[in-house]
Length: 323
Image 1 (cartoon, rainbow, N blue to C red):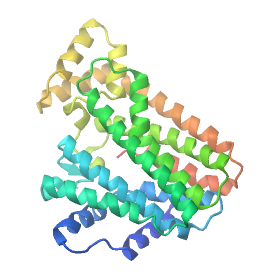
Image 2 (image 1 turned 30 degrees about the vertical axis):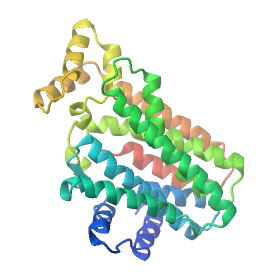
Image 3 (image 1 turned 120 degrees about the vertical axis):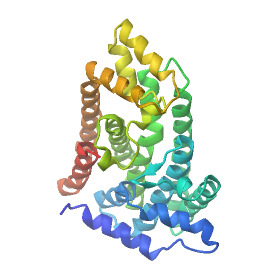
Image 4 (image 1 turned 135 degrees about the vertical axis):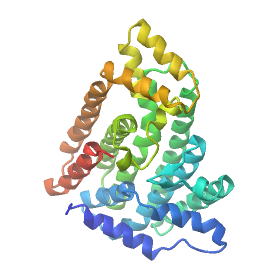
């Protein structure tokens, strides 16, 4: 059994103790649906890990951790609409099971519930945490817009892409850890260090997600295989392929990415190019680079090694996963 199981149990109990089902049922049932269809609930666990790392009372961090879980699922509901995604965690997405309008409105309600879950924090801490929470939420929106822009932008660079995934994925992992640290009363220096640890780990996590979208086990992923290719998303795989390609290969890659189609021939052709150009190896190197950056920061934080062990276990789960 993973040592992290005790934190998962606290999150599960927190959700049970704070039911969101109210009237009208049409608003709250989709919220309950997305919260119950699985997922690793990594981000709320990360809040508890941030509190535990600095010897805080993790029980005081449970409701703020639910705020992170609610916000994350709100963003998924809206992202799935924008991506026209049919599956989430192997189940129908909310807009597919119900309808688009319901997914929009229920997502909005879940966002408001996220802020409500922070209300029990004492006033000074509430102000600090809410300020970080709001900053993070806005950065996620900015990252999502960059991702959308990239679909039709021809001059996306490596730095552009890292900035995008930093905002779309990295900052929520980082903020989750920092919120936990703030609840524990960590110093400003330590809170900033654990934020930077989370930012680098979040980047590595998203890079691994990009890899799994194409090369992962579809059964484990529970979502559409190669969805990024279908959507012409200019991930690090695409950018690495462009850099490594000769003129003929580059022309072929640009041709396929110029088509908005569900034709499986497109996926096969691009996957073949990716393998030929060894982009999976390039990506593996980048994942190690950002994971090592995160680990170096964690090593410099002056806390018990046993506490760091939980974060090392988390890192292994996030980066070594196959789905």
